[in-house]
Image (cartoon, one colour):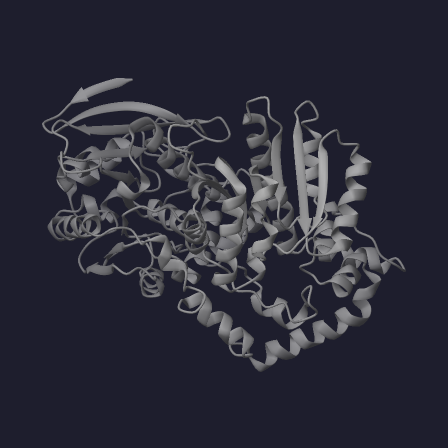
Length: 597
C-alpha cells in the first residue's frame, strides 16, 4: 500500500476483490483532522468513461470536505485496474463491481452506506443511477454530472450497425471521436487530458451497447429511485444528450432532487474553466443530504397505495394505458394461446395451473422443450426462451449460489435448519442440498398446494437425499404457519411469492412471521421483481394460479428491502438478474446481544 500526504488528507492506494476474482485499484483520502461529531462520512467519486482515479485528486480538494474521507476507483479496464482498456464483461459487471466496492469500504474502512455520498460523471453517473435502481443502497445522496444516458453518436444508425458488426467480431472496439478541446474550455485541463497516458481512447462495443440499453431502462423506470439526487447538465455538451437527463430527473421519486443547467459548460463539468457554480451547488447539496436522515423502512409500508408503481398497477387493473391496436394484438395472442398453445407442454401447464404456479415454474426450470405434433416442441422452445423465463432460470442459479454459500458457511454440531415458505416443487432447494450430502441438514418445504408438495417429494426421492425433508401444507401469509413450538431456522427462503401480491400489509405480515421463524443471526434469502418490460402483454394474455389475469405490480428494490428491514432483518447483498427484472437478496436477523453471527 502506497501512502502520500497532502495538506488535509493522507492519500493511500489499495485494491479490492470482485466476485470474479479481479482485483481493482482504488485511492483513498483519509482526513488528517477527522470530524468528531458523528460517524465517518465519505465522498465516493466515479470517474468518466476513458478516465481513471488519478484525475480525482483535484476534485477532492475542490469539494473541500476536509473532515471527511474520499475514495475513487479505477473501473476495470481503466487506470491501474486489470482488463482490456475500455472493456468489461458487460456494463452490468461495472455496476456489480461498484456495489462490491461500497461493501468493501464498509469492511475495510468502517464507513456505512448511509454515510456515503457518491459523485459521478458521465458514464460513471449511469453506473451510479443503475446501482441506485437495481441494488437500492441506502446512501445519503448522488451527484450526477453530465450523465451519459444517451451518447451522441454522430454516425447514422451507429447502434444497429455495432450490434450487427458484433455478430462477426464480438471483441469490437470503438475509438472516441472526442477531442480534449470538446470536453473543457480550459486549455490547461485539455492539455492534461491529452497527455495522460492512462486515459483509454477506446471503449468496447459490448460496454457501449450495454450502457445504452441499461440507460434506457433506468430512465424509463427512474421513479423507482428515491435517493436524493443533484443533476448537473452541460449546456454545450458534445458528448451526451440533455433530454434523457431531464426526463430522468422529472421521474425521480426523490424527496430531494435538483436539476442545475450550466449553459456554457462543456461535458467535463468539474474540469471546466469556471467550476464555481458546479462546486457551489455540489457543496450545498452535500450539506443538505447529510442534514437529513435516509428514508426510514416504515416509509415503504404504504407504497402499494401511494407510489408510481401503485398508480401504474391501478391503471393496469382498470384497463388503461394500453392502446386499441395493442389491446387487439394481445387479445389475438390470448385466443391463439388458448387453442394452438395447448400443443406446447409449457403453455398447457400454464393454462392448467397458472403461469405463475409452482408447476409452471418447475417446468421452466427444467428447460426441456416438449409438445405434440412436432410443431409443439418448436413453439415450446420459443416459450421457454422468453425474456421472463430466461430471467427466472438465472434467478434460480443465483438463489442456489447464495443458498450454497450459506450452507458452506454453517458451523457447529447442530443440524442446519432450512425453511422454504413457498417452495413449489422445491427444486432449487433440493438440488442445492444434494451437493452438501456431507453436512447435517434438515429441510422443511411448505406450499399451499398439495400438488406442488407431491412433486417435491418425488424429486427428493429421485435425488436420494440424506437430508431430512419435511413437507407441510401451509399458507405463507397465515400467522399460524409460523408456530414457535417448531423452533427457529438458520435459513429461511421466500422465492417468487411476494412478487405476486401488491398488498404491502399482506407481505409485511408474512415477513414478520418469517423473521420470527429465524434464529438470531440467521439469514433470509428473498427474491424481488423491481420491474418488467412486458407487464401489459402478460396482463392481457396470461392467467395466474387463481385463473385470473396475471396482473403484476413490480415492487422497487428499495421498497422490498424496506419491508424486509421493517420486519426485523437487514439486507447485506443483492444479485441482479437478466435485464434487472429479478433480484435475489440476502438479509440477516440481528444476533442476540453478546452472541456470535
